[in-house]
Image (cartoon, rainbow, N blue to C red; front, top):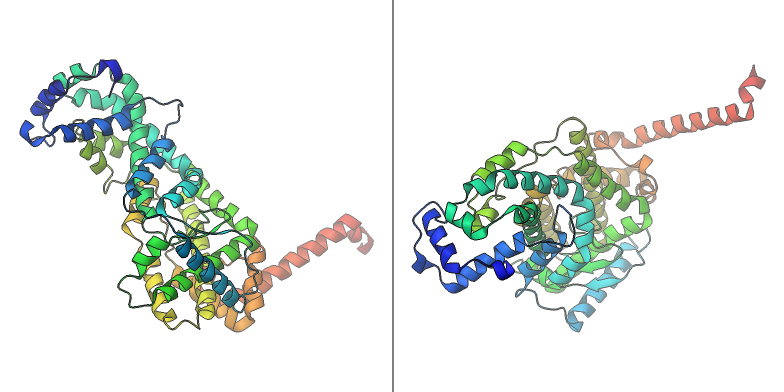
Length: 437
């Protein structure tokens, strides 16, 4: 674990015997050599040095995410890839009748869970780096100041100077937890945009193994499940492809929110005080149910509400368009209800990810957004509805979610005011006001 200065395992055992993994007397007969190796391996991952000084060990996060799906991640064969291609091709043909937005001209891929991790990790990093860095630095400070004094004397003697390890421990612990959460997400997501963000970039991606597990027990033909999910993925990608500003705005909103987060340092210090340095599992439990990010207030609350509104608008539009496009599917209604329940509640991995970075991946006003788009479609038609996505200035607001029927009137008033301002500016630039006088 520490090269030539590695401590004697028997010395570690004696120290652990006195400390106990959970405050109880330790029975050495319960720890076989393999268990010792596993514990030392986890300590090594967290404490080993790094070639960079980054507060968050992102390489460790990706490695952990990959390891969490290993052994339960069959590779995607040519048959499954063909099924995905066929489903997306059919989905696009049906969407042509349900929206004026053109199909996204992007590659179609069928990914394993590990491939999803590899393809999305950099985007997760880009979105969450500000809050991850703040949390990691606060955790490192708390560990450096408090943890050495909590270790038994024998263990301190075995490990020697712990300062170099302490420097890396906070970032490594957080990297492990974040990697585990992303790895668990990889076992739940169904497509590249399933989280609401274009996390897979300029690719239309489906995960066959997750889709198969999602369809288990639904009493729905697998091909119908696959086509319905392809419809949702293709619809979102049409939005992102036809409104390039949309993906940029989503990322910017997340980064703005994350950059302003205030970390609850006292909560981290309390958690470190209860950390058992001889029990790697306690390091996992430290993050379980813990929230080091206080409830947002003021500008932070406004920022997260703006993000939630935009995510709800995206999912609401997708719901309305896919409901129209999926009419040929016999099980479309049942699948829609299942997806909406899933979107509303979220899975365990999403909650774990949210507790780490303070970001809820599920829009809370999905029903209101769906009602808004349906109302606009009924009163103004498909072209008017889809043209709203041409500009950020036309997007509905939280006020519009409260009053869907009033959106069109408010939009007309805003357009009239904007046109009047443009006319006044034109007259000013042309000297029209002086002539009038």
